[in-house]
Length: 384
Image (cartoon, rainbow, N blue to C red; front, side, top):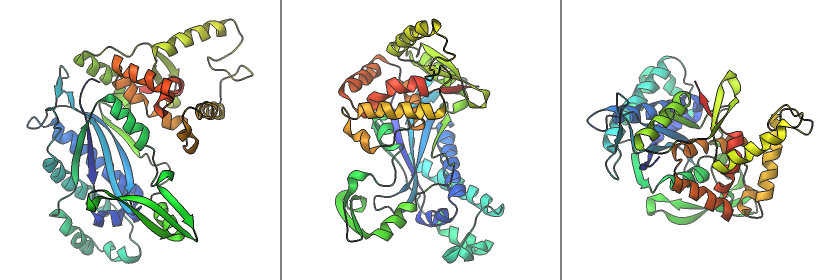
């Protein structure tokens, strides 16, 4: 969409991170819920913005030194829908919401939800935290946090949809440490590069025993099935298609036609925006399929519907063919699930400028250039 995009980061204090290590699913869930409620509540307040916003949040659990540091990265368009849905309300240029107000509400909501979880018996405490099983000890442990300043900050606004896409490509599916930060593995030790944010983000190196390096890396393994990327407001899955179309209409942005529909899991239907070039290819392909005995638009060699394994195989082949033009793909794990997360930004930003951006990157062979060709087949947004 033709609007500002803001990058908001919400971090929990070290005392909370300590509890989170022994209660990952519950505490990370509270982090998502408290952060989402904070952003939506303050944005809906007429004293601040007075609008329904939409955003996505990405959970990171590490710092540059690989120690446990849970925090959320939220990407938020700079505005939202009015209460009656008749207009788009924009933020002030370069300013989203007061981080001081966000911090205070985030602190209160998080601690309330944490106490509710404790009272419901959803928290477990072991080893040095075992005394916290006692309610009085738990309250004493939390007492300093009620007065402490919780870190919430808004980074400089994104320069536009292109930079948002670049962020999505580089950060949403990263792990605790990338290969290019590893400098040496020798004599049972691992040396890696990190930024020391306590000293103006200076580049430094750290050497750890292999066992300690592995221990730190494993701190960031998430509970099975945990969703580390979540969408809220007008980007929430259920009403995303309708609300984004309405936002584009209010902003005077052309619609993302054409589109294709397909059956999805849970007997839902997916509406998939298509690039004009992709639409033309599909039309020609359908004409060929009409003259054959294939039972599906994208058939297997036997003419049947492609299986999940077949889709994974095709994607691996696409990546293999792209590696000569984009060597960094060789070290990356590209999956259909990862590719699908590009779709909300294609839907939000169907403008001529972004179309040019995609085409230029496709020609130059950068990572994002794969998206226009893969998303229309594997992506999609659910309709209610």
